[in-house]
Structure formats: C-alpha cells, structure tokens
Figure 1 (cartoon, rainbow, N blue to C red):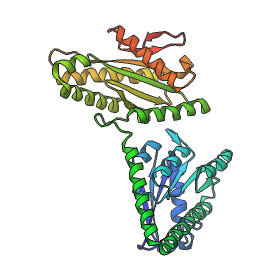
Figure 2 (tube, one colour):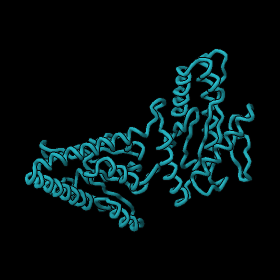
Figure 3 (tube, rainbow, N blue to C red):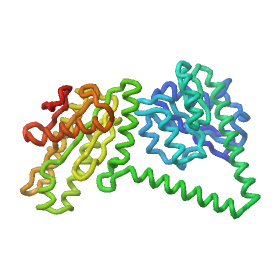
Figure 4 (spheres, helix red, strand yellow):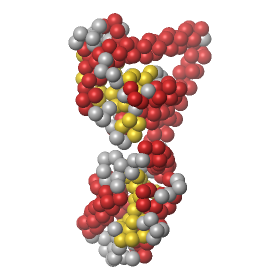
Amino acid sequence: MRTQFNIDDQMRRRVFIVEGDPIVAQHLVAALLTGEKQQLDAKRIGASEMIECTIVPSQRNFFETDPAMWDIVITASNLHDGNGFEILAFVQGLRPDVPVILTGDPDEADGAVEAIRAGAADYLMLTGHEMITLPVTIQKSLALQVIRSENDDLHADLSQSLSELGVANRELQLMIQRLEVAARTDDLTKLSNRRWLNLMIEGRWEEAMRSGIPLAFLMIDLDGFKKLNDQLGHHRGDEVLRLAARVLEANCRSVDIAARFGGDEFGVLMPHADPDAAVSVARRIASAFDEAIAVLELPNTNVSMSIGVAHWELTNPVNADQLVRHADEAMYAAKEDPNRRVMIRTANGHSEAA
C-alpha cells in the first residue's frame, strides 16, 4: 500500500515500511504523516520534501521491490518469513547509502545494540509514542544522509577527477551487486537457483535452531526425464522443466522457496511447516504435475515426480545439509517404488509412504 503527502513538490522521500502486522504498519504511516498533533511539522523532516510511504507485508515481497526506489527502509525485527537483519543485509548489499531503521517491542531491547553494530541507522522501540519518536528518528537518519552527501560534494570540489572515478566505481559496484541478485535465478525455469537456495536453507536453519520454528524440505526428481530427452530432444525436455517449475510455483505456499536443484531435480524449502503440511504440499505438487504433463501429450514417454520429505523434528539432523540429505534419501526411496510417489523420512532412519 502506498500513501503520500506533500510538504513541497521539490523533493520526494520514499519510505518502505516492511511490517507483517497491518495495524502496526498503519500506525507507523500515521506517525510519519501526522506527527504529534495529527499534523506533521515540516521542520522535523526538512522543508521542501514529500514523504511517500510504501507498506511491504513480508521479506519476500521486499526482495521483489526495485532498489532504485528506496530512500529509507523501516523494517520489523521479526517477520513471518524472515527478520529485520536479513532486510538490513539485503539493503546494505544493494544500496549501502539507504538508511535502515529496525523496529521492535521493548522486550526485544537486546536487539537494538546488535542492530546498530550490524549497520542499522537506528533502532526504534514500539512503545506507543511513535507520533513523536518516529519523525525524530527519520530526521536523524536523513540528517546523517545529508552530512554524508555534503561530504561527497566536498570531495568532488577538491578533486573532480577523483570524484568521477569514485562515482564510476560505485556504479560498477551497484551493477555487480544487481547482477548478483539476478544470479540467484535459474535462467531456464525462473525459479531460485541452487546457490540462493543454499543461502536460504542456512538462514532458515539458524532460525529454526534459535526459535524452534518448524522446518521441512522437499527433494523432487522427474522420473522418465532422461528417456524423454533421448527420444524427443532437449527442446521438449526444457519444456517439461519449465512446466515442473510452474507447477511448483502454483502449489507451494507463499513462504516456501522453490528452486531448481540441478538437472531434473528440484527442492522446496518450507519454513513454518509441520510434517503434515509438508506432506500435503508434496502430494499436491505430484498430483498437479500429473495433470499438467498429461496435457502435453508426449508420445511414448511417461514423466512423473518422485518426492522425498524431510522434517527436522522427525529426523533430528545435525545441520541443514543433513536435512537436505534426508529428503534426498526419501526421494530415492520413492523412485524405487513406482506406487509410492511421496515418501517421508522417519525418526528411525527409514522412509515411509506419506
């Protein structure tokens, strides 16, 4: 949701509020747009500015925004699909010039020191006084940003050629960092690639270990894919891989991360999922793929999915790699029995039909 108000049309500040609680998000917007007496004092933010607030309900949605649009980012410390420190790291990687303000409840005060050490511009305690504290916090962040900008201008005056070299270097760094973001996507399927999946697995594993949040992983393999490639060619094989990707995107939950693991294998990371939910998604994916592949009417071929499910509460893996390995073992058990499309790794180290 985007809200804006004019102080003057000469300058615009775009504030992104990453907050999963719509009530808290609206409260922060109100604090920005109305101030202490329902009317924001222009001197708090600076004359000749316009504030445009964009509410982003999740980490995943924020990752999809355009970095060029960020002027200030305000993010909750805890999100349903991530946390404020991941948002901070993401912004620092792409736009180190953008101030990031983390918010949290008073009982999360320990996070304030950690946030500042990590590079946050400030940490705002949500005490109910945000009509006063938030504009001041924004003012401080913008003042620091202005100081940095003026310092850059001074260096430009002292040495124009050095400034031009610095600007070119920053642009190159931004381009490289944006390419890094683009590199997390698999070219063929447009799903996340294995590199990005591995990063997300490590992050969610640490979250699960720290907070006891359920975590599951699905390993998926296309049975009969090699025969299809040999008989019909790689063009049709690529068509089937893209079809599998669309099935995953359509049948995973919004918080899940679906990725091409390699070749004809796919992986789905499922945070906040109990074993029954993971199995339910796996069954839905397998069934939807059967329906989708039938529409292609591939001659003399039979392509299906074998899916292995692993859940950290069931198998007690020692690390994220072992969780993935457990799902892989369950997937191979499913491949050995054509009548068992989905298998789950159990506590005794065996795989059972799910």
